[in-house]
Image (cartoon, rainbow, N blue to C red; front, side):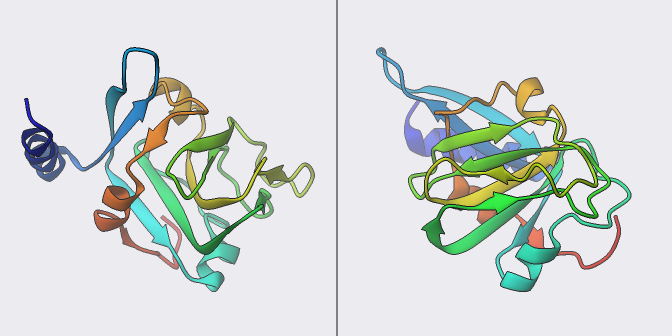
Length: 159
């Protein structure tokens, strides 16, 4: 199956079941493609949205998340202040590679903070254990461009 056919298939799956992103991992026999899905991903691409994130939300649907997009790659730190939902925090570099995953973070904490290990451009926050249930690992690659194109605008209210 050609790459074009794969993208067409992913598009149709997305239309029927929600946002889908392709994840692939390099190994000795070539990339391994995995497809995971989200029902909804909010896009936080402005500084005010970065500072608010998922704070003060009472819930997050099981297959929902928030994608933080920064203008430039840099070392980043996140904390769980005023965040009542345990999350997985996924740090992704400008090459779309997952550099660090923090799973099942502690709600309502300012210490510890969760930091990238090198400059990153994207952070994806999901419900706790989403990475485990979808077999996402450090070193995997995420199709961030597709995720951005299918995301919804930042919601400034409780969900």
